[in-house]
Each structure stands twice: as C-alpha cells, then as structure tokens.
Image (tube, rainbow, N blue to C red; front, side, top):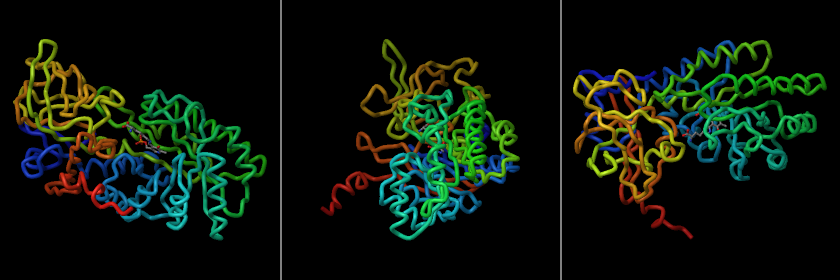
Length: 429
Ligand code: LLP
C-alpha cells in the first residue's frame, strides 16, 4: 500500500523518521514517498500491460513539478485540464505526444498553447468546443488529433461532486450525440476525430461501472465501424481508488482483471488517466497539535493544519486515517481502520485553526491521548491534498518534501507572509 510505517513507535517515510523532517522544515508539511509513487505507477503499467496503454498521470491530483518530473522520467504521460497544467507538464519534461487534454471549458488561448505544444490528443467535451478547435486549427493550417469525451450515463457510486459519467453532469456528450459527431466529422481536414474518451468519476471503488461504460462505448465504436467510421483509440479515464483505510480499494490488478478482457482484441490504442491511485498513498500531511480542549460537549485536538491545507474531509466528508507520528508501543496501529480496538483511546474531533465549524480533519475519532506539540500524520493525503489547498485566513501554504530511501529534500518551500501579498503588490494594470 505505501512506505509509511511505524518502527519502534516512530512513523517513518521509507528510511526517514518523519519527526526529523518536522524538526527541520516545520509543520504543516506534505511528505511524499518516491518509492510508493513509482511502485503504484509500475503496478498500474503491469496490470494493464497486455493493452500496452499510454499512462497519462492526472496532474490535477498532485501537481508538484518534482513529482511530475519523476513520473515523466519514468516514461509517464499526462492528463491535463488547463493551460497551467499543460505548462507544468511540459516544464516537468513530459513528452507532448503523451499529453491528453480534457476539460469542459478550454479557452482559445489554452487551445492555441496545446496546438503549439503538439499534444497527443484533445479530449473534446462538446460540439461547440469541437467547432472552435477546428476553426483555430484551420487558421494555423495545422491538423490535430482529438477524442470525444463520452458521457455514458453510468453511476460510479461515488460522491455526487466527483461523479462525472451520469447524464445530468456537465461532462462529455451522450452516446447518440457522439454517434452523430463521429459521422459528421469523419475525415475532417483540421481535426482528426479518432478517439473516444471516458472518465466516469473518482474514486470508483467497484469495477462494474467501468465495465458498463466501456461496453457502451465499444458498442458505439462497432456500429460506427460498420458505417465506415474508424475510431482507433480509447481513453478509459481515471478514478481508480487509493487505500484510505475504511475498506480496501481494489488494486490496479483487480480493475485490470475486469477491463483488459473487454479490450484486448479490439485493436485500439488505449490511454489510462490515473491520479489518486498513483499518488494518494504516496503522501501524508504532517501536522502538530497546538492545543487540546475539553468542553461539556466534546474533546478537541486543535492542530496547525486544517481545511486550508486539506479540504477533503470538509468538502466531501472524506475519511483520512489520522494517527500520532510518535506513539508508545501499545498504540502502534495494526491497520488504518476508522475504529481501532486499543485500550485507552479517547474520542476527539481533530480540528484546524480556521474560523469555520466546517474546519475539521476528523470527527468523533478515537485516538491515543495527545498533548500540545505532538506530531500527527494524516494519511493517504498525496492526492487532492496540496493541490486543493488555499491561503484562506491568510495562512501560507504548507511545505512539500520528497523522500527517496534515506534522503529527503524540500520540493516546495513553505509560503511566507510576503507570498500572501505578492500578487497584490506586483500589479501591472
Ligand atoms: N481524468 C479526468 C478527466 C479527470 O477529471 C480526473 C479527475 C482524473 C482523470 C483522475 O481521477 P483519479 O484517478 O485521480 O481519481 N477532488 C476530488 C477528486 C476530483 C477528481 C477530478 N477528476 C477528491 O479529492 O476526491
């Protein structure tokens, strides 16, 4: 699952006790394990190996340049959804031909930048976007490859905010519209509409929604073929789970076992866009206890991190396993379950310093007794952690640290008070 383990009551990331990092860099700090990230990347590549997929890391899940470079160096492509993400991917050394670009609202500037970069595939989300791309490409006497994002109307059984494959969501076009567009745009001189794209939601903890969506799209591809329209690529999206600890997520091999047989004789170029499943378990957010407080209603552990650093509990009610980074022998956790059967735990709300009651990391969680200055680790925070952080309440963003074996380095310095004001002082017009 990952390289964050307790040894003699100390939490280690690979060979490094996380307390050493806190002593130098302070808290809150995101700590990433290179071995965990690359291990998950390799497992994904192996599991889907029969399909020889292009793996396009969904950069939105954790966009740090150094994390992205590491993946690019290992041959990984990128799934981007903005000009900023494209810029990051290119700066990280991505091969442009292995970049796919989704998103319902690409601006003209972003489309131009992607054309100039020579990206592999535009994942188009509407007829209007297709027309706009075609006119921009035509004005430059160029030709680009594109795929249509299809909304297959399947239920990924995940949080409504991250469910993207049901018909009432803004994503993609329905199957009938896709059929019409593929026929109308067959052999277009500026846009080679050659692929189908799916991304049904995140996280998707069962394989059935993938199978249903892929079967629907294959039916469309086969019927187009019989009408002389060739679709030669299929992007099956992301959404594969990470292990948060409540229930074990299917592994890459479990997803592949259901998906690969559907595609292995289809003669399609396959793309996969995992984010969370690669980087989720590769990161923890390390924080420090500022105070503990007992009221007639509750016990609170107040930390120096909160919704501004990790918004997932507040926004989605998401579960993250939280545990002290230094514990007595009897408190070494045997698993990352929501409730551990250990004597002497206290039920607490783990909250942050932000001035909202929605600022919590966990509610009603049973943890070992904690004191001011104790270190606390929030696990499986590598995906959609730092990227969704904000400076709310004028809180400088956390530092990021990358551990590789017995070495570690800061890959994003902690923001300063000056950083908070920079864009307001350096005003051009
Ligand atoms: N491809 C597309 C087009 C996407 O929109 C996404 C995620 C992915 C791939 C990668 O999904 P993953 O493999 O990471 O699950 N903020 C939410 C998750 C939002 C996901 C958005 N799209 C969270 O914290 O759970």
